[in-house]
Amino acid sequence: MNLLAIVLLFSSVLAKKVFIDNDGLTAPIALFPLKAGWEIVGISGSFGSASLVDSMAQISSVREIYNLTQCIPQYKGASQPLLRTPETFQIWEELFGTLVWQGAFTPGYQDVYTWDNVTFDDSKMAAVALIDAVKANKDTDPVYVYAAGMMTTIAQAISLYPPLVNESAGLYIMGGYFDTQYAAGTGAPIINDINTDINLMDDPEAAQIVFTAGWKKLVIGANVTNYLVPSQALYDRILARADLTVEQLAEIPYFQQLSTLLATGNYTENNDQQTLPFWDEVVSAFMVFPDLIESSTDFSVAVDTQFYSPFYGSLRIWGHEFAPKGVKTGNATIINSINDDKFYDLLIDVYFDDFRSYCHDQSIYEYQFD
Ligand SMILES: *[C@@H]1O[C@H](CO)[C@@H](O)[C@H](O)[C@H]1NC(C)=O
Ligand SMILES: *[C@@H]1O[C@H](CO)[C@@H](O)[C@H](O)[C@H]1NC(C)=O
Ligand SMILES: *[C@@H]1O[C@H](CO)[C@@H](O)[C@H](O)[C@H]1NC(C)=O
Ligand SMILES: *[C@@H]1O[C@H](CO)[C@@H](O)[C@H](O)[C@H]1NC(C)=O
Ligand SMILES: *[C@@H]1O[C@H](CO)[C@@H](O)[C@H](O)[C@H]1NC(C)=O
Ligand SMILES: *[C@@H]1O[C@H](CO)[C@@H](O)[C@H](O)[C@H]1NC(C)=O
Image (tube, rainbow, N blue to C red; front, top):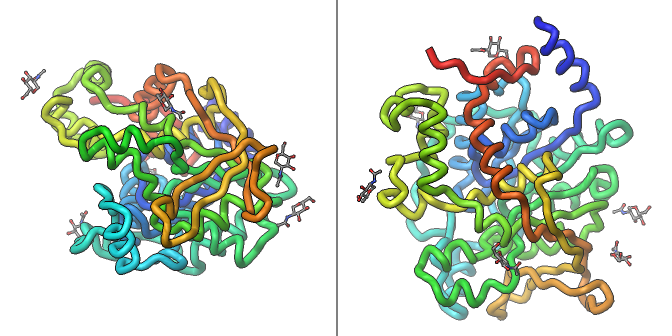
């Protein structure tokens, strides 16, 4: 063990802690916290944009590639929304308009993975694992909760253990758009897609329960994340740093996630799915590197939970003094802008760090090409 590793090990006793729930995972979402010196006390996969098994397998894959399986436990989260069903999802679309992105509610959705592709701790469900992690650290290092899919698993945990909101440091979420009608209405299908608040619409009731539960801090990253996107300039920077071609990089198993991001390495040729914004990554980044945040605004918030409404599952915001009395609201901080350049720098950095000895001694090195 070298001196650097000893220092890191010592500091980890006081490291900030986060529990991650998501409907899938890309590497940076987990790597940003580790890079910032945080400890990930658990990751759970839940139903949402992907089926439960696909979400879980994506998480397992990241844990395996980065050799994080031994020190970051994985748990199984919610397998369905509280109230929403595939049938009511389709009926609502017939009433109020078709959605471009339907996630795991897409008719005929086919799983990519099987449970053979997943390694997880099945001794307890994610909601209970989250509660245990929060309780265990409440007096020393209150756990931050990060939820970038539906809010179902967090709602389950609050239902089982309401003090969760006071015993954790706060909640950071991806989703919670507002004022996006014009953008969604004017653009190509992909513009409709990225301005659809699927995380909330998939389970509006869970989102309302969670956002109004009284967290010490509730931080929402929505619109801001839509404008941090892959580009040819980003691809070129990545390939220059690797000093390899897309094909050569694809042959290195450690860079599987980076290869997925690059796809062909040609922005013009990459399809809509390959050029999606860095939604969840941005929220993870500003949670652990708060210096990235340039502007934010506090609001009272609530989620429309009326089925017969074109805004079922949409976030509504008010200035505190105008917040309704007849609907439960929560206080939230909405991030308006972050330092884009610093975000891209960090993104490239974590992709070129080597995390494979992290579980052994908490060290993170720059990846050494042979
Ligand atoms: C899932 O696991 C099976 C069996 O090990 C393997 O053949 C398959 O390639 C894996 N699927 C994916 C998408 O990784
Ligand atoms: C959280 O703490 C505040 C202040 O002590 C209290 O008013 C509130 O009831 C607590 N909330 C829960 C859910 O325990
Ligand atoms: C959404 O983000 C874009 C780009 O950063 C910005 O121009 C726009 O003002 C934002 N809208 C809101 C409502 O914050
Ligand atoms: C990217 O693809 C477009 C469309 O196929 C092509 O015109 C362009 O030359 C490609 N750029 C590079 C750098 O290969
Ligand atoms: C929300 O914030 C406002 C303004 O700071 C404050 O008056 C109010 O008590 C807060 N509400 C809750 C539920 O914390
Ligand atoms: C993977 O992590 C384990 C400890 O969890 C460690 O013993 C092993 O050396 C690591 N592998 C690599 C390639 O660093």
